[in-house]
Image (cartoon, rainbow, N blue to C red; front, side, top):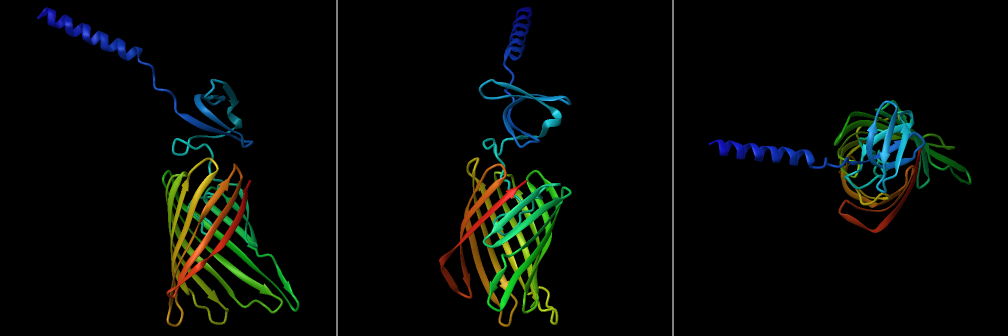
Length: 291
């Protein structure tokens, strides 16, 4: 029996020594974003009230004052270091993510420039106008505004509600207004997500207001494939409440190329309305700059 106890003691001592000698798992690689926009990638070996110390893959150590660090986050999907600067929208439709307090984004889709501003951490406001059309006897433009409030925003899920209004103005007067109210939910991370939404859209000439002239269901898909490229698909099923009604299905699918602040979208649209398929792709081009 004493021999057995001695053997067990030796085994336990050896196991303890082995566990103590085993190297600790390496720190996870993270991205450190500085207030000037610089991104450092490496192992964060110190994160204190005074400084953040980052060790790059080549072993170079960089010490940064804590008040110069905007955020310390994990890599996207463990692979990508760059976030999509236009991640609060698909192509036309918004996602449920918020722009962020004080952030601003200038966008131009076709001939529709707009400016969006983050008011607090949960509210985004945007205003825009079409490039004025001027022909003999007529000058016209379209003004638009949008507000979105993010009700839920945590890792893996966000939910928001919002509304928009479009007002055409011409030298012949203002024929009416149109717009949408909507709710969207974005499920997934920055590197890949699904956005589900429901829209109600309306048009009125003021004299015969008719709210809820149509509805649409949105299914949006995002997949980041590199530090500069994301695949985006924006798909709708819509019902227009007119005499006899009309149902339409449309898709806008393409690629987003992006840097730290600038994003460029290239896509094509197809659609089916009242049983007729549009076999001619409609090109879509968009640019945005977040600052």
